[in-house]
Image (tube, rainbow, N blue to C red; front, top):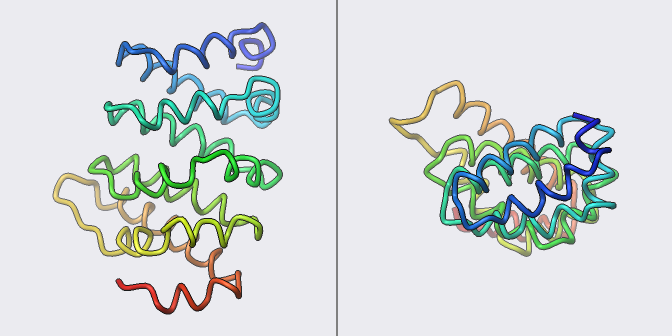
Length: 182
């Protein structure tokens, strides 16, 4: 994985994840998500390659799988708090919040994971609340689906609860949290 990043493959993958060919974009985003699992790749992906601009395009895809892999990439990139402000400031919060309502259970899980990671940084908490994250996070807690695996739904709910717990650390968000119409 590290060799691919160091040998320039990342720039090519970043462009391919924006492809108009759905299968190509899906697989490129999947490779990026896998690469983002390796801690030493994250800084290169974010700072040298500017991966977020490409992921924002993938987040607007009509293909649920491409969006899911883009969200998974962001969840992996945001697993280190040092990058969460940069990620939250890139314009991905609203698409992540939208994925909380996806019919794809894995998309919901990765979105809840990413939002939980981003909400761990105090500077992101108010932004997530102001951009409409409260109600969709609570909706994840009540979501039931006949198509979803029960264990997968439980993990998704745990990530949503983690995000809500992180958001409650923001005292200026308490009023909005208490006034949220659920």
